[in-house]
Structures are given as structure tokens and as C-alpha cells.
Image (cartoon, rainbow, N blue to C red; front, side):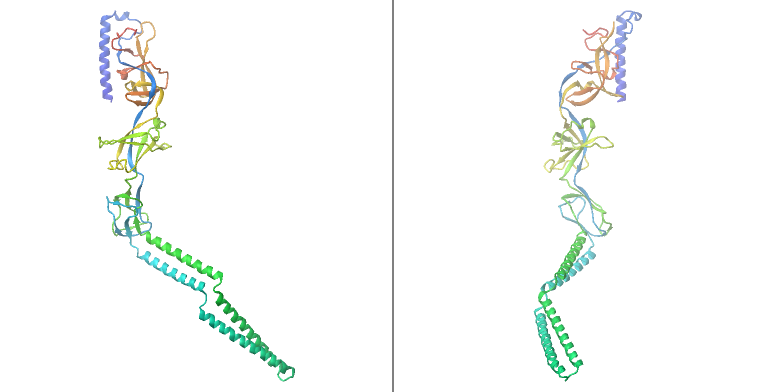
Amino acid sequence: MSRTLSTLALIGGLVALAFAVRWVAAGPEPGAAPPGRPPYVLPVTLGTVESGTLAPRATLTGSVQSSERAQLGFRLPGRVATLEARTGDRVAAGATMARLEDDDQRVALERARATLALAERELGLAEAGEREEVRLRLAAELDQRRAEADLAASEVKRNSELLGKNVIAQSTYDALVAQEKAARARVAAAEQDLARAESGARPEELAIARAEVDLRRADVDIAQNELAKTVLRAPFEAHVVAKLASLGESVAAGTPVFDLIDLTRREVALEVPSAIAARLRPGGLAVLRLDEAPEFRLEVPIDAVVAAADVASRNFQALVRLGPSADPEVVLKPGLFVRAEVDLAPIEGAALVPEDALRVVEAGTIVVRAVAGEGEGAPALVAEWVPVRVLGTEDGRAAVEPLQGSLQAGDRVVLTGVDLAFPGVPLMVPGQAGGERAP
């Protein structure tokens, strides 16, 4: 760039020198020149400022990525027993990728199932109550206790008469009364045993037995989950990018074993400068191209524009999501650099200038306006810098907004020679004499 500018400066200087020699040879003595008149002019071509609507396009850059990418690892530590996928394989959702040694987990599951079976049997016994033969035995015992009680009552009644006749001692009678009370107590106990056998377990006992079954079922679920953790499955249909572990290797929980990527859920992330972010609309078209494949061209809509800018770059991000039908041959692979031409919102009532009129200087972008010289003997046209902000470009035209001064429709701006046009430099257009004022 610096070499080009130097060359242009040399050519411009030589042209200016030639015009200066011509002007000196044809004109009066140097001392007779009007005060302040420059000894040369800068040859330029001019364009015209227009006012209208510009539908600009912008070229953005970005990269292809997958919205679904995962590094899979086991959820518990162990030794790798099998690896059932290789780098480059395509795997279905739910496919087994690898297994850990699972002897401990299988033993724990069998123990939990056995404990559950025992609890279920105990609950069944509690719900069923006593067996029929037990109830019959208890009923017979009750009859026996009642007969014993009746016999004891008869003995008390008979001996009460003998006590009144002083035939037996008081102590003998008291012993018989005590035996009757004991017999009645045995009857009451037998009645309770029979009633318990006929009614079954108490509600509290049944609740405890059922809770024990629920607890053992939870233990089985836990053991099954622990066993399932020894199997690594693909969470989605994917391609294996890399195999990261070896057979027989001891791995910690979460250590990556496979790197998977879903090529059916690709997206292109485009970097959007803040200057155009407000005019980039979701739904607008983007034409994607690859430097590595110049013949490739894909026209797709923009799905989303991220609302917040990146803190470091101050750029926004636009996302183009690629469905399976958008690029069926998967030319756009994750990691590729992409260029995208995107449509921006139209700019209405803007000042439009040819793109050749734009010049970038240290302070920013400018256009050089050709204005009439002022004062007696002044050049017909002189250069004036106008700092501008470029709002957009399309088909060789740029919509600009002046940052200082004004830029109106009909104003003339320098095209050829703009890089050498500094403020106050006399300008000459084709067909106009160097020192003559424009008609």
C-alpha cells in the first residue's frame, strides 16, 4: 500500500511539475503572478453526489460449527472393558459406545433384588393373616379354656356350701376362687389370640411392611442405575471425531472417551461489525462461499442475530442454521472458514457517492469535495475534505453521512486523484484550463 501511494505521489508530482512549466512558459513573469496563486493544479476527475435509497450488501466472515457436540465420559470411575466405536464412525442415537468392567455393579443389583423379594414375601404374610389350621387350633384352645373356667366356677360354688358348714377350711376355698380367676384369664387370652388370627395384621404393621417393600424397590432402581452407568451410549446421531481412551485403561468419572459431533445440526456463526448490526435483519438472505471451493455457493436465510456484542471484539454474531436439506453433501464441515454476502436494511434519503470517492486517512474516512475558489484570481476549483461515516455500499456506490460540514445532492467529489487531494489544492478537470475559473 505504501509503495502504491509513493508511486501515485511521484506521478502526480511529475504531472503537476509539467503543468507548472507550461504555465510559467505561457504566462507573465513569475513576479507578476497574482498574489496567492499556486504555481500548479492537480488533475482530477469528478463525480456527483446523489440523494436516494441504497439497498446495501455486506461481506461477513465466520466459521462453520455444530450446535450439538459432546465429549462423552462415564459417570463413574472404572476400567474400560470394551470400545465399540472407532474414529470416523457414524453412530445412531442410543448406540453403545463403550463399557466398563461391571462385576461389582451386577452383584449389588442381585443383592438388591433378593432383599426386595424377601420384603415382598413378608408383606404377603402380613396381608394374608394366620393360616386356617392355626385359627382352628386357637379356637380349640379357647374351648378348652372355657371348659376349664366353667369347671373352676362349679368347684367354687360347691365348696362355698361346704365352707358355710365348716366342712372345709377358708384357705381351701380361697385357693379354689383363685383357680377360677386364673381360668377366666386364660379364656380372655385365648379369645384375643383367636381374634388376632382372624383379623390379620394391624394397619400399622401393614404400613411398615409396605414401606419396607418400597425401600427395597428403590434399592433395586439405584443398583440398576449404577449398572447402566457402566455403559456409554451416544446421546444423538453423530460422527465420532476422536477416540480418547484405550481398552483396559482406568478412567476417572467424566474423563472424555469419545468426541462426537452431529453434522445434521450445523450452523454458521458470522462476525457482524457493530456499524451494520442494527441493519442486519433475521430472515434476510446470506450467500455463503468458501475460499477452498470457489464454485460452492449456498443461499440460506439468517436465523438469528445475537442481541449482545462480544465484550472483547465489540462484534455481534449472526447465526445461519443449516438443516439436512440445505447442504446434503456436507460441504460445509465444522471448522471451515466461510464468507457470506448479506443483505442489509435499505438506507433511504442518504447521500450517495461513488465508492472511488472514499479515502481513508489517519483520522477516518473522508470524501474530497470540489468547491469554487474564493477571492480575486483564485483557482476555479479547490479541494475540501469532508469527514464521513460510511453507512453501506452497493454496486460501486456508497451511502455516507457527513460528520462535519455538509454534503448535498449535486455536490461534486473527487474520484481520480483523490489520494493526492489535500485541503486547498487547486483542481483541474479534463477540458478546463489549469488557471481558469470554471464557467
